[in-house]
Length: 153
Image 1: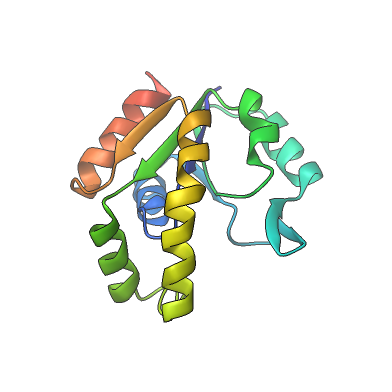
Image 2: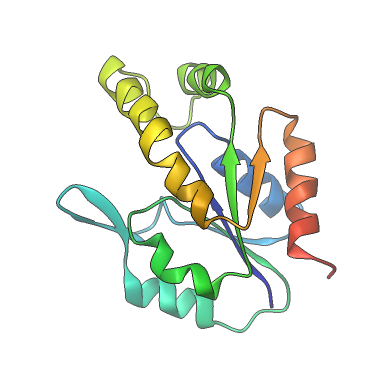
């Protein structure tokens, strides 16, 4: 079946899109939670055996995986689509300021890092992506586009 990676900067809407996909009955995996991440020199990395097992598991419908880590490119060939979720900087900063489920991005130092990542990392993610969606649009439109990317059931 189809595996779709949702990637992008903090505040781009990955978690919100994933939650809505799950609400609609799609299989989802948020790799920010549950031990999927290890750190090497401070950089987040996916645990390779866990990702291998996840992407090898039989399923009856699409799987949407959310994450942005330094070694994600190692798995691009295992995904049918790599979707960069992006938004204007002002939208991202406002989301970070007002979100309640995650405190990352609240401090000036964290916001400065996110702005650097947008300038330096997001272009690398864009180069490896098969699709890009502007999440400045309503969440429903983003989710419908993701379902379309995953293809017919």
